Image (cartoon, rainbow, N blue to C red; front, side, top):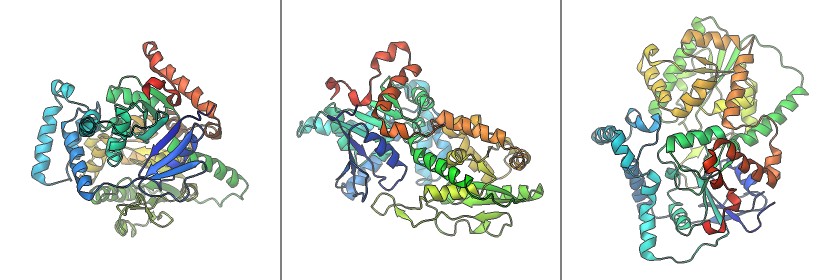
Length: 484
C-alpha cells in the first residue's frame, strides 16, 4: 500500500527529458512526489508538485566545477577500464602541459597500494559541505518523512550537493537513481547513498564489482528510461498490423544513430561512416544508410556525407529544447513516435556506440554490432573511434558480448546483407540485450499503477545477495525510522 507518510523529493536539472517521466510516474504510486529543480515544469504530471530552487552564483559554480575536477584527480579509481585508462581519453581537454601532468599522476595512482588508500570520490566531494554544516551547526531540521531521490553520478549534482549533504547529516534517506548503464563504471558514482534504484541484477553486479560498495537497500525497477518507448512501440506495432503492407524494396535500409557530439570525435566517426559506405559499395550491396545525427551537434557537421550515393541524413524532428532551462544546452530529443517512424524504415540497424541500439532492439529491428579490433584499424579515425569504445566497460560488456558482432568490414557487410533474408539471429541477440538491461518482455503498466509491485520487486533483491547480507535489504520506502 502507498506510504502516505513519505514524501519523495525527486532532484533533477534535466526537466525537459521525456525519459524521466516514467520514473516520476512510478514514484507517485509510492508516495507524494515533489519535483525539485531550478526551472518550473509546465506539466509535471498528476499529483506531482514542483519546488523551484535558486541557483548559486557563477563564481560559486566555477569553484564547485574546479573542486569536482580535483576530486576526480585525488579520488580512488573505480574497478573499470573507464577509470584506469582515463589518460587514453584525456587527449582533448585543457592545455597540453596540464594534460601531461594529470596523465603522469594518473598512472602513479593506478598502483594498487596507492589506489587502495585513496578516499572515494563521494567522501571527498561532500567533505567541504559536511565540514561547513558541522561548523555552522544544525538548523532547520528536515522532516523525518522525506526521501531524497537523486542522480547516481555526483558530477551531475553540483547545485543539489548542499541539499544532499544536509539530508545525509540529518539521516534522511538518500536514494541514488542509476539512470544509465554506463554510470556504475565511473569513480564519480555515489557510494554513500542509503539505497539504489537500479535497472536489474546485471546493473547491481556492475556496481558491486566496480565500486566495491557494501550492501544497501536496492530496488530493481527495470530500465525505466525506455519503458514509455517500450509501450509506445507496442502500440505502434499493433497499428502497423492494421495497415496495408509496404511495397517491398530491394535495397537494404540500414539505420545508424551518431554516437558523438564533440567536434573531434564526430570527425573520426564521420570518416568511419565514409569507409563503411565505401565497403558497402565495394561489396555490391544495394544499400542506403539512414544517419540519425547526434542530438546536439552543430548544423552542417554531416555535410561531407551528403554527396555519398548510399548515405542519407535523417534529421531529428522537432524544435530544439532548452534542456536545463538556463540556455547552456539546446537539444533535439525527438519523440517516441518520431523514433519509431525512423526505425520502421530500417531493414536492420548498425550498432557501434550509441544507446539508440536499445531502442532499435525494442522496436525489433535486427541489429548488427561493429567493433573493429585495433590490429585491423588502418587510419587515425578508425583507431580513435574504436579505442574509445574499447575504453567503455558498458559497451564491451553489453554490446560486444551480447549483440551479433562483426569484427571486420567483410564480416560487417555479410551480416548486414543477411538480415534481409534471415534476421532471426540479429533479433534474438537484441532480445538478449534487453533482458540483461532490464527492459520488459511484456507490457509494464502494472508496475506503474500497482504499489504492491514495488514491494515485490524489492524483495527479489535477495536473489542476488549473499545470505549474510539479507538482513540489510529493506524496502526503500519503509526504511527504519532510526535511519530518518
